[in-house]
Length: 274
Ligand code: PDD
Image (cartoon, rainbow, N blue to C red):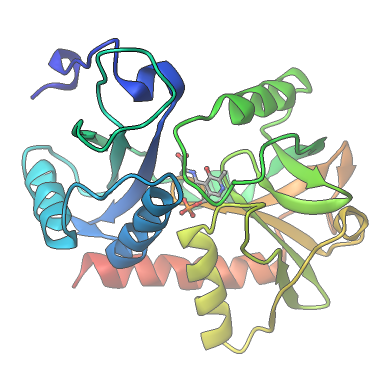
């Protein structure tokens, strides 16, 4: 149905508590990017909040293809949200008897054009005050909203979040640094979302003999990095050119970024023509 006609109950736990999880799956030429990986991250999010998966992977795939067929466009994204459903009373306690609420829509993501992306973004570092379960792709995003507000108030596009002097991630993306041609990114765990773009970038790098290290990254390493990138399904691979007001590396998108972004575009093109 048209999105403006879709409604949910005010008693939905997604609305009352942010008690739900979600996924954003990019689509290129009507092909879902890394669907299996997105569905396995979805399963992990559901397991972590003890909510059973209302559909099989085949059913999800069928639903997404149906949704895509009902909407125009080539490059876009599927948004999927599952909440713990509608209970008669507002109560934190959970019961398995009420069905989950499933909502999916198409996001008309405008693919960032390469000239705009290569201009780079400015970011600040902010203390990561979020909870210890950032690997769950939860719809409870108020902390991320506050962090994004802080970045906007500082006049920059985004923030790199720092927990105990270590880099965790962005407000809605993962972080990479490049030092002496080695790609370095914090390891997955409870401190960050295991980004599908992150994994794809690591895979592309390794397949092209670029060295990759998944290890803790100190905040101080940011200030000595040759390049910094932020990655996500919607942002793809964004080069950071200013950090806390100072230039990163040469102050423009770096050579390793150019290499990886070309390979990433080739990967997308292959998917479109499959
Ligand atoms: N956000 N970290 C956080 C906190 C995120 O919200 C996201 C993605 C990522 C990157 O994950 P991926 O590469 O799978 O998109 C990392 C999505 C795009 C969003 O909330 O819209």
